[in-house]
Amino acid sequence: MLSAGLPEGAMPKLERPGPLRERVYEALLELITTRALRPGQHLVESELAQHLGVSRQPVREALQRLNTDGWVDLRPAQGAFVHEPTEEEADQLLTVRTLLEAEAARLAAAHADADGVAELEKLCSRGEAAVGGAEVEKVVEANAAFHARVMALAGNTVLAELARQVDRRVRWYYTPVARQRGAQSWIEHRELIAAVKAGDEQGAAAVMRKHTEHTRRSYHERERG
Figure 1: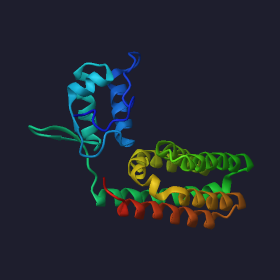
Figure 2: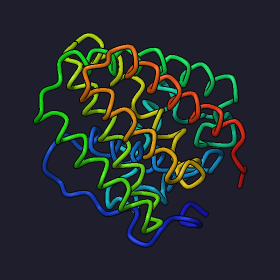
Figure 3: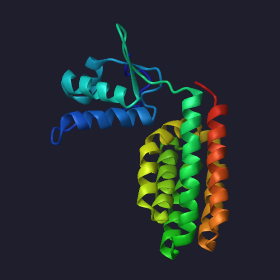
Figure 4: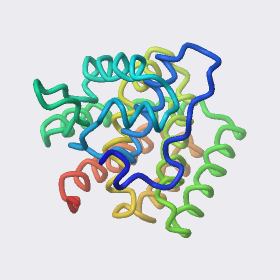
Protein backbone atom coordinates (compact mmCIF):
# COMPACT_ATOMS: atom_id res chain seq x y z
CA MET A 1 0.00 0.00 0.00
CA LEU A 2 1.19 3.50 -0.77
CA SER A 3 0.19 4.87 2.61
CA ALA A 4 2.22 2.30 4.53
CA GLY A 5 5.12 4.04 6.22
CA LEU A 6 3.91 7.56 5.44
CA PRO A 7 3.92 9.86 8.49
CA GLU A 8 0.57 11.20 9.58
CA GLY A 9 -0.30 14.22 7.45
CA ALA A 10 2.73 13.72 5.19
CA MET A 11 0.66 14.08 2.04
CA PRO A 12 -1.69 17.07 2.30
CA LYS A 13 -4.32 17.68 -0.35
CA LEU A 14 -3.33 20.35 -2.83
CA GLU A 15 -5.22 23.60 -3.20
CA ARG A 16 -6.41 24.31 -6.72
CA PRO A 17 -4.77 27.67 -7.61
CA GLY A 18 -1.64 27.46 -9.75
CA PRO A 19 -0.54 24.99 -12.45
CA LEU A 20 -1.76 21.67 -11.05
CA ARG A 21 0.71 19.38 -12.81
CA GLU A 22 3.60 21.43 -11.40
CA ARG A 23 2.15 21.36 -7.89
CA VAL A 24 1.66 17.58 -8.04
CA TYR A 25 5.22 17.13 -9.33
CA GLU A 26 6.66 19.28 -6.53
CA ALA A 27 4.55 17.54 -3.87
CA LEU A 28 5.71 14.09 -4.97
CA LEU A 29 9.32 15.19 -5.34
CA GLU A 30 9.31 16.60 -1.81
CA LEU A 31 7.93 13.32 -0.46
CA ILE A 32 10.66 11.42 -2.30
CA THR A 33 13.56 13.65 -1.22
CA THR A 34 12.46 13.55 2.42
CA ARG A 35 12.00 9.76 2.07
CA ALA A 36 8.38 9.84 3.16
CA LEU A 37 8.14 7.84 -0.09
CA ARG A 38 11.07 5.47 0.18
CA PRO A 39 13.39 4.13 -2.55
CA GLY A 40 11.77 1.11 -4.19
CA GLN A 41 8.27 1.99 -2.97
CA HIS A 42 5.42 1.22 -5.40
CA LEU A 43 3.53 4.35 -6.46
CA VAL A 44 -0.09 3.71 -7.40
CA GLU A 45 -1.71 6.49 -9.45
CA SER A 46 -5.15 6.13 -7.93
CA GLU A 47 -3.83 6.20 -4.36
CA LEU A 48 -1.61 9.19 -5.03
CA ALA A 49 -4.52 11.02 -6.64
CA GLN A 50 -6.74 10.29 -3.65
CA HIS A 51 -4.14 11.45 -1.13
CA LEU A 52 -3.44 14.64 -3.07
CA GLY A 53 -7.10 15.36 -3.81
CA VAL A 54 -6.64 15.49 -7.61
CA SER A 55 -7.54 13.39 -10.64
CA ARG A 56 -5.22 10.70 -11.98
CA GLN A 57 -4.15 12.71 -15.05
CA PRO A 58 -1.82 15.22 -13.30
CA VAL A 59 -0.43 12.36 -11.22
CA ARG A 60 0.34 10.38 -14.38
CA GLU A 61 2.03 13.41 -15.93
CA ALA A 62 4.03 14.03 -12.75
CA LEU A 63 5.21 10.42 -12.62
CA GLN A 64 6.33 10.59 -16.25
CA ARG A 65 8.32 13.74 -15.53
CA LEU A 66 9.79 12.23 -12.37
CA ASN A 67 10.85 9.26 -14.48
CA THR A 68 12.55 11.56 -16.99
CA ASP A 69 14.33 13.35 -14.13
CA GLY A 70 15.53 10.08 -12.59
CA TRP A 71 13.41 10.07 -9.42
CA VAL A 72 10.94 7.37 -10.46
CA ASP A 73 11.29 4.15 -12.45
CA LEU A 74 8.41 3.17 -14.76
CA ARG A 75 8.45 -0.61 -15.21
CA PRO A 76 6.38 -2.25 -17.98
CA ALA A 77 3.41 -4.21 -16.62
CA GLN A 78 4.41 -3.30 -13.03
CA GLY A 79 3.92 0.44 -12.66
CA ALA A 80 5.87 3.26 -11.04
CA PHE A 81 8.45 2.85 -8.28
CA VAL A 82 10.62 5.35 -6.42
CA HIS A 83 14.10 5.06 -7.90
CA GLU A 84 16.66 3.17 -5.83
CA PRO A 85 19.99 4.94 -6.32
CA THR A 86 23.05 2.76 -6.76
CA GLU A 87 26.11 3.29 -4.61
CA GLU A 88 27.94 4.56 -7.71
CA GLU A 89 25.21 7.14 -8.44
CA ALA A 90 25.40 8.45 -4.89
CA ASP A 91 29.18 8.47 -4.88
CA GLN A 92 29.41 10.44 -8.12
CA LEU A 93 26.94 13.08 -6.98
CA LEU A 94 28.43 13.48 -3.50
CA THR A 95 31.90 13.80 -5.05
CA VAL A 96 30.66 16.63 -7.29
CA ARG A 97 29.03 18.21 -4.26
CA THR A 98 32.42 18.26 -2.49
CA LEU A 99 34.02 20.12 -5.40
CA LEU A 100 31.23 22.73 -5.53
CA GLU A 101 30.97 23.31 -1.81
CA ALA A 102 34.69 23.48 -1.13
CA GLU A 103 34.96 26.30 -3.67
CA ALA A 104 31.88 27.99 -2.18
CA ALA A 105 33.49 27.86 1.28
CA ARG A 106 36.70 29.41 -0.08
CA LEU A 107 34.78 32.24 -1.72
CA ALA A 108 32.61 32.77 1.36
CA ALA A 109 35.76 33.24 3.45
CA ALA A 110 36.92 35.84 0.96
CA HIS A 111 33.66 37.78 0.80
CA ALA A 112 31.55 37.25 3.94
CA ASP A 113 31.03 40.21 6.26
CA ALA A 114 30.03 40.21 9.94
CA ASP A 115 26.33 39.95 9.07
CA GLY A 116 27.00 36.90 6.89
CA VAL A 117 28.94 35.19 9.65
CA ALA A 118 26.13 35.98 12.11
CA GLU A 119 23.62 34.34 9.77
CA LEU A 120 25.75 31.18 9.62
CA GLU A 121 25.99 31.13 13.42
CA LYS A 122 22.22 31.46 13.72
CA LEU A 123 21.61 28.60 11.27
CA CYS A 124 24.18 26.47 13.09
CA SER A 125 22.43 27.04 16.41
CA ARG A 126 19.17 25.98 14.77
CA GLY A 127 20.75 22.76 13.56
CA GLU A 128 22.32 22.02 16.93
CA ALA A 129 18.93 22.45 18.60
CA ALA A 130 17.33 20.05 16.10
CA VAL A 131 20.05 17.46 16.76
CA GLY A 132 19.48 17.85 20.49
CA GLY A 133 15.78 17.23 19.99
CA ALA A 134 16.41 14.23 17.70
CA GLU A 135 14.26 15.90 15.02
CA VAL A 136 15.71 14.41 11.84
CA GLU A 137 13.51 16.35 9.41
CA LYS A 138 14.48 19.66 11.05
CA VAL A 139 18.15 18.60 11.06
CA VAL A 140 17.99 17.96 7.31
CA GLU A 141 16.25 21.30 6.70
CA ALA A 142 18.77 23.20 8.82
CA ASN A 143 21.68 21.47 7.11
CA ALA A 144 20.33 22.41 3.68
CA ALA A 145 19.77 26.01 4.81
CA PHE A 146 23.30 26.27 6.23
CA HIS A 147 24.94 25.01 3.05
CA ALA A 148 22.71 27.21 0.91
CA ARG A 149 23.79 30.23 2.95
CA VAL A 150 27.47 29.41 2.48
CA MET A 151 26.78 29.16 -1.25
CA ALA A 152 25.01 32.54 -1.22
CA LEU A 153 27.91 34.17 0.65
CA ALA A 154 30.28 32.89 -2.04
CA GLY A 155 28.69 35.40 -4.42
CA ASN A 156 29.15 33.30 -7.56
CA THR A 157 25.87 32.88 -9.47
CA VAL A 158 27.18 30.15 -11.79
CA LEU A 159 28.43 28.11 -8.83
CA ALA A 160 25.09 28.63 -7.06
CA GLU A 161 23.15 27.42 -10.09
CA LEU A 162 25.27 24.28 -10.35
CA ALA A 163 24.71 23.65 -6.63
CA ARG A 164 20.94 24.03 -7.05
CA GLN A 165 21.00 21.29 -9.67
CA VAL A 166 22.35 18.77 -7.14
CA ASP A 167 20.79 20.14 -3.94
CA ARG A 168 17.69 17.94 -3.85
CA ARG A 169 19.67 14.78 -4.45
CA VAL A 170 22.08 15.81 -1.71
CA ARG A 171 19.11 16.08 0.65
CA TRP A 172 17.91 12.68 -0.54
CA TYR A 173 21.25 11.08 0.31
CA TYR A 174 21.72 13.06 3.54
CA THR A 175 18.36 12.17 5.11
CA PRO A 176 19.22 8.51 5.96
CA VAL A 177 22.54 9.52 7.56
CA ALA A 178 21.45 12.69 9.38
CA ARG A 179 21.02 10.85 12.68
CA GLN A 180 24.31 8.98 12.20
CA ARG A 181 26.21 12.21 11.47
CA GLY A 182 24.51 13.83 14.47
CA ALA A 183 26.32 16.48 16.46
CA GLN A 184 29.64 15.89 14.68
CA SER A 185 28.26 17.46 11.51
CA TRP A 186 27.50 20.67 13.41
CA ILE A 187 30.90 20.69 15.10
CA GLU A 188 32.33 20.72 11.58
CA HIS A 189 29.95 23.56 10.68
CA ARG A 190 31.34 25.55 13.63
CA GLU A 191 34.88 24.92 12.34
CA LEU A 192 33.81 26.24 8.96
CA ILE A 193 32.27 29.38 10.48
CA ALA A 194 35.54 30.06 12.34
CA ALA A 195 37.51 29.79 9.08
CA VAL A 196 35.05 32.04 7.23
CA LYS A 197 35.12 34.60 10.04
CA ALA A 198 38.93 34.63 9.95
CA GLY A 199 38.95 35.10 6.19
CA ASP A 200 40.96 31.88 5.85
CA GLU A 201 40.10 30.84 2.29
CA GLN A 202 42.21 27.69 2.13
CA GLY A 203 41.23 26.67 5.65
CA ALA A 204 37.52 27.06 4.87
CA ALA A 205 37.88 25.00 1.70
CA ALA A 206 39.74 22.27 3.60
CA VAL A 207 37.11 22.14 6.36
CA MET A 208 34.29 21.89 3.83
CA ARG A 209 36.13 19.22 1.86
CA LYS A 210 36.59 17.14 5.03
CA HIS A 211 32.98 17.77 6.08
CA THR A 212 31.40 16.67 2.80
CA GLU A 213 33.75 13.68 2.58
CA HIS A 214 32.54 12.54 6.02
CA THR A 215 28.95 12.68 4.75
CA ARG A 216 29.87 10.71 1.62
CA ARG A 217 31.54 8.02 3.73
CA SER A 218 28.61 7.93 6.15
CA TYR A 219 26.21 7.32 3.26
CA HIS A 220 28.16 4.29 2.10
CA GLU A 221 28.43 2.98 5.68
CA ARG A 222 24.78 3.63 6.56
CA GLU A 223 22.44 1.02 7.99
CA ARG A 224 19.95 0.05 5.31
CA GLY A 225 16.41 -0.26 6.58
